[in-house]
Length: 222
Image 1 (cartoon, rainbow, N blue to C red):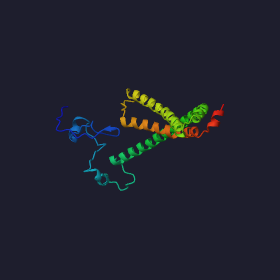
Image 2: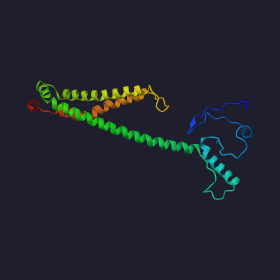
Image 3: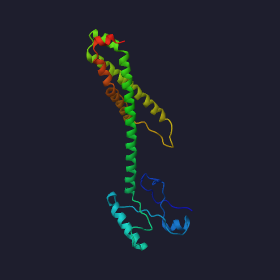
Image 4: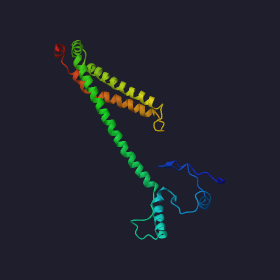
């Protein structure tokens, strides 16, 4: 059945399960006679004059439907009204919940990684106690020992961050469930910055412990 296109709607984007840019609008009689046949309507789309008038438009639509359907008990109507603003709030709440869950998982991962860095650096300090004693006996200041182990912890954490970035970059080469991942440069910079911060924070205790060693006790360490 041929139709004449008289205009193109403004791009609106997806709104849940239905893509608003994949909709054709035609006169009701033409649709009933040529496409779907005669019958009752199961859905009506109403557009408010603006974002601030959606609640007023919903109240007006509700009043009209109650009047035409003869509904007196408004607690159990024979229709349902879906407000896009309400749906958007629901989507935002769900997105916020997933964001909190992902943040919690990321925080736990950072904590576990930080504890691992602390353990590795503590073992390193223990194995190199005599080396620290020799350096201090030769006049190495406390700041030099502290800076050395902080640098090692930071580099260790940064290597882990770079490895994660490489894995993420490899993941962007593939589509996941029809979604094309995108690598955002600011996210890469943030990830590497967090890696450096984790190394400095969790490497501080082992580095401080190494810097506080007394030369005589360090040289006697077996």
